Amino acid sequence: MAESTVLIVDDESAIRDMVTVALEVAGYRCLQAENARNAHALIIDENPDLVLLDWMMPETSGLELLRRLRRDELTAKLPVIMLTAKAEEDNMIQGLDSGADDYMSKPFSPRELIARIKSTLRRQDAQIQEEPIQVEGLLFDPISHHVSINGKALAMGPTEFRLLSFFLSHQDRVYSRDQILDHVWGGNVYMDERTVDVHIRRLRKALSIDEHDRFIQTVRGAGYRFSQKLVAD
Image (cartoon, rainbow, N blue to C red):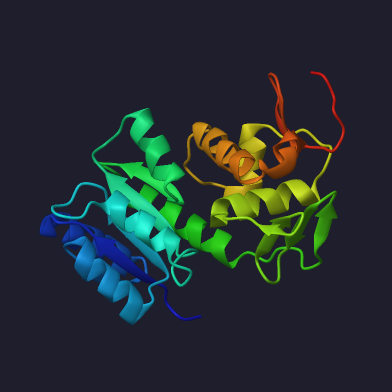
């Protein structure tokens, strides 16, 4: 199996070198960029499997680069983990809302970072069901990676796509946040349960056309479910 390539984007060379050493020992090929401009050029030229992206950089921030990547069809599904000194919950939500697949605060454990990289890449490679699923006007096609409502194509990030795939394959059953993390993000992943809430909110926003967001239901004290039935909890 070919080694995965990870692009490390950080304006501090000491952090880039530290992460590079840890990842190379774990079997990854590493690329480095000290700013967003160089990072974008490497992404286009080298097509890395995953990007570790610092938030606070001079000129163009990591968050701005992330948003640019998500707007471009060629890089919209590129896995991105944000590494940042911004540890507040609002910052985490902003990063995830902008399309990050995961979010780690500095300082961080190299072992935890490697675990998160493995989990993110496993999710990227995971096989999903291949038959299209239709629920009322909602059409989910895993082969073409296309989701539409009444013929209108939806803009949806890779994590929301996996989350919707899971819900559509497990309708009318309630899942806790821990269970959703396990099924959608993978076992042994170090993530906060609040991450689920952020992506549920983003999925509902994507499905809001003709009120299809009503299918994603909150079950108080239990978790979430996808159901066409309107059930009071």
